[in-house]
Length: 281
Length: 184
Image (cartoon, rainbow over all chains, first blue to last red; front, side):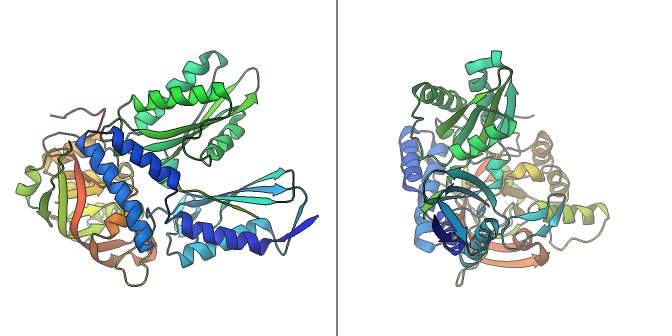
C-alpha cells in the first residue's frame, strides 16, 4: 500500500488553479488558429484575433484569461493501492483552491446559498470533486475552472430509443443554436450518451477533459462526433454568436450502456477558454 | 479580407453618436463607464422602483456587465471581460428609460431591450467574452463607487482607452446576431 499525504493534493490543486486560469492549453490555441484560418467574415475574424491576442496578454501579464475563473471542478482517479494520509480529500482539495485563488488573484465566484446571492464563500470553495477508484498506486488529479456562462447553456434530455442517432444530433444542434452567443462560442461540447440521468451528466463533464479534437477511440462514436460538429457549425452561430463558420471547436462524446427503455443525452457546454490541467501523483 | 477599422467614440455617449452606430460596427470606446451585474442591478432596481436616488448617474452613461477578477499589485483591475447580458434583460428597459445610453455584455438581448434601444435611443455593445486579459489592458483606472460588500459585483467606475466592442443591437432595430431579425 503506497501512502500519499493529502498535502500533495493541496499543492497540486493550488498550482493548477493558478496556472490553468492564465495559460491557455496549446491544443486550444491551435484550434483557435485553425478556426481563424477558416473564417473570412470580418466580425468572426475580429473576435478570433482578440481571443488569440488575449492568450498572449494573459501569459505576458499573468492576468487570468477570463474574469470568470470558474467553479473548481476536480476529478480524482484514486489508485486502489493508495492510502491517503494526513487529512480528508475534500478538505485537501478545498485548501488548494483557497490558496490558489487567493495567491493567483482569481475571482471568488461561489455563493453558499443558491437562493441568497449575498453568501459568497469568499475563497471559491467548495470545489466539486468527482472521485473514482482505479487500479494501481497513483493518484491522477484533473482540474478545470468551469465558467458559469457556458455551464448555464448545458442541457440534459431523456430521449426515446426511437429518436436514435438523428435525435441526438438534432437535440445538440438545436441547443447550441438557441444558446447563440451566450456561452462564448466557439465552444467545446462535452456529451454523455447513455448511462442514466445522472451518469450522462457526469460523462459529459468528463468528456471536456479529453485533449481538444482527439476523436473517440471507438470509430462509430468518432463518426457521431464528426456529424454533431458539422451540424453545430452549420447553424452559423459563429464566434460570440455574430456569425461565422466556427460555432464549436470540438465535440467529445463519452458513451455508456443504458436501459432498454432509455436514451439519456447530456450536453455540457464549455466556452472557448477550455481550461484544464492534470497532475499525476 | 476583413476590414475592421474601428470607429472611435468618447464616453459618455451623445444621442447623436448612438444614432450613428449600426449593428456590426467595430467601435473603440474611450472615457468613463460603470460596471454592474446581477446583484448590483437588483439593488438599483429596488431604488428605482422605490423612487429613491441612485448611487450613480445613469443619464448618458454606459454600463458594462462585468464582474472583474481581483486587481493584482500595480494594476487598476484584474481580468475584466463581459458577462452574459440576458440576465439583465428584465432591468435594462427601465434603465434606458432613465437615460442610460449603452450597455456592454455578451450574447443576445430580449425583444423588450431592443425596443427600448429604439425608443430612447440606446445601443447594446458586445465585448468579446473570454478576452478578459486583453480588455483589462484597455482599462486605465477603476474604483468601487457603490456596494463594495458585493465584491466582484460591486459597482465600479472605470476609465477606458480604446476599449474594443462590436455593436450588437442598434437604435434602428438592426442586429448583428445570427438568427435574429431586424425590428421595426
